Length: 120
Image 1 (cartoon, rainbow, N blue to C red):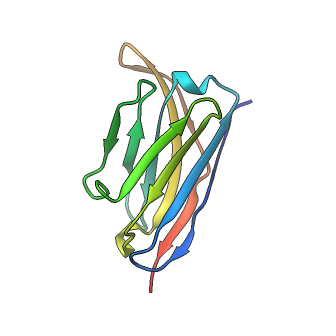
Image 2 (cartoon, rainbow, N blue to C red):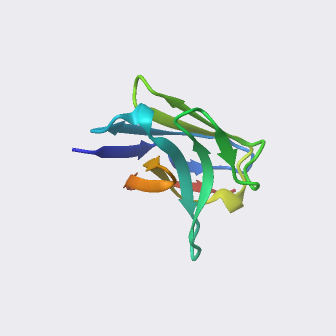
């Protein structure tokens, strides 16, 4: 059974930091690309950061230089270190894992999300 569980969200003041964790099981994590997405109130879900199975990393422009994504293939976990948070980062943050072959997504798993609120 596939499980993806996020944690680490919460309320923080502007300029603060949070570290999100995503614990997975039930699939071969090292084969999957993984990433963090967020959905701000009234907006569509958007990519925050991704890290491929080979280690290639992509950040959204809005978070580049402030957020750091990493993964631990032995543990099946992916992390998002978020620094210098601002109110615009307030959103539900979701962990995503997907398996592609020849550019076709074969499997795609989502967690339930964790809420981040940045407010003074």
